[in-house]
Length: 581
Image (cartoon, rainbow, N blue to C red; front, side, top):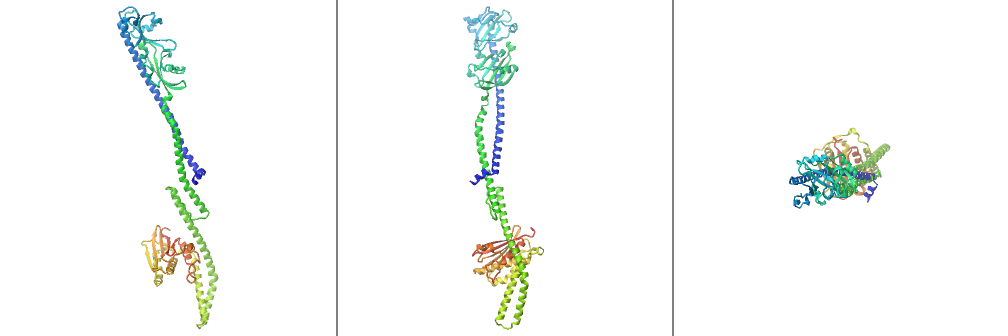
């Protein structure tokens, strides 16, 4: 629920979300638009090429059919040579079998003679007659009844050499001529026209299909071949045409074969894509939304955790840690944040401790100055009284007790002096193992007399540390003495103190460990405070660990406590190696 609110309110979340959606959908729409346009153009171009090719094939088919009709008419004319008269061949029963099968009617006429059913007289022009005299055929059209398509006729002289003027005229069977027995023979999605002279429609399929004036104008302006688009009955058609030249063989203006195809049929593959494109966009949108939300959640969770962590640190809650397991840079950032928080806590504790040490140092200076001289005077007077007191009475014992307490007070004051800073000029490279050896030599007799086993484990090849020898002797001595007090207090069967040195990265570590009584958890944070002690007044003043902490701080060393009540205590001090500083 928290992440959902962050998703709705975070500027970063909204920015990432809109960038994702924009970057995903914008290229998709641009690609779709380019694809639509490209595919439309390609399909339209392919349709135009296909229509032009089909027109050319249909034109060649019609031309071959005309040549077949011409051949049949020529064969019939050769059989009629030497026969006089004229008339319809079908009207003469003995000649019925001679009629070509691909003509509806065939007749032999002379110029000016009427044909069957009083059709208009066949009157070729001088040019047309000269064409017939060359032995070639003449193709002409004659308007049919209203609403019907024109009839196609073919004529040729029976004997051009005789000059008798007899002409064999046949009405062509248009089903054979156009190569279409029925409408089913045509390409279903390609309407077809055949235009004759003056753009007169000789044939159309379907029969009610027409061409508008604009289309006829385009064909007239570019009569050879071409393509264009036009509208018919609310549909857009792509049209291709090809001109069939008949002037040489048949002395008639060329016919134009026109084929059309509905643009919706041409672009049908794109229409399917359009149908599913919207669903594809929706699917893409949901996928992008899902991925963006996942990414936002993955990024905002660490950000929110880090934000809360920084707020707690700002409130003074040092040492707070965040748990980030994202497997990326955020996880590394979380670890760095935790390390920073830990160091801030240590730094704050060190500052507090330094403030305490500073206050104690100032107090020590005042105590040494204000109490030192009077104590010296009192100690001298006690010495004089002891000299005068010869006996062993109660007065002498009281004076000796006073002398002892004065010495104890002088010792406390001398310990205050240890809070003074260690001068940087007195520090030099030292071997931590030599510090251990010197300290053990000083305390060896006392340790053995107490019945305590002390083990030394010194690492080999340890780098030197930078320090002041006497101060470090005091640190190790105090830790070992405290360990002795702890194991003796517990009265363990096998009291043991372990002093160990070892390397750890670029630092040198010193460990003092015992199996004594341990330190209760409730007082662990106070053991470095000045004047805090769990021992009686005859054993300590509570300055030992405070002095240790002050000395280690001046050596830029860290001390870590690990203790379990009833099991023992371990102090680990880590010094920076001299070559690192």
